[in-house]
Length: 198
Image (cartoon, rainbow, N blue to C red; front, side, top):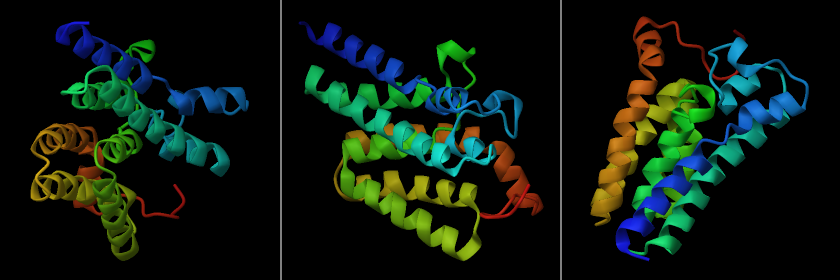
C-alpha cells in the first residue's frame, strides 16, 4: 500500500470507530430513555448517568475511551509513520461529529483520554491525576476536564513528543469549544458540581 492509502485507511477506520455511539446503544438496549431527549442531549457517559444507570454510564465511559485507544493502535499498525496521529484525531472527531447521528455527538472527554493513552500512556495518567486533583478541590467535572486537557499537550511537549502534542493541542481547542456552555455556567457560578442533583 502507498502511504496515501495507508493514511486514508487510518483516517476512515479511526473516524468509524470513534463514531460508534456506545452511550446511545447501551441505553437503548437497556430500555432506558433516548439520550438525545434528556439532559444535555449528548451521547456521552455524563448524560447516560442522568438516566440513573451508573453501570451503563461506567460502561459508556470505558467503551468511549477504548475506541480512541484502539483507533490509535490500528492507525499505528496501518501506517507506522503518522497513522496513529491521523487515527487519533479522526476517532475524536468521529465521537463528537458522528455521521449516523447527523453530526451531533458527545463532548469527547472519554475518547480524548483514550487517544492519550494510545499515543503516550504516561500522559494519559497525567491527565487522570490532574482531573482527580481539580475534582477533589472544586468538584466540577467540566472544570476538571478542561484543566486536564491543558496539561496534556503541555506534558507531551515537555516530554519531547512534538507530533502528539500538536494533535492533542488541536483536540484541546475543539474540546474547549464543545464545553463553551459549561464554561459560561462556570463563570456564572451555575454549573452543577459532582454529586449534585439536577
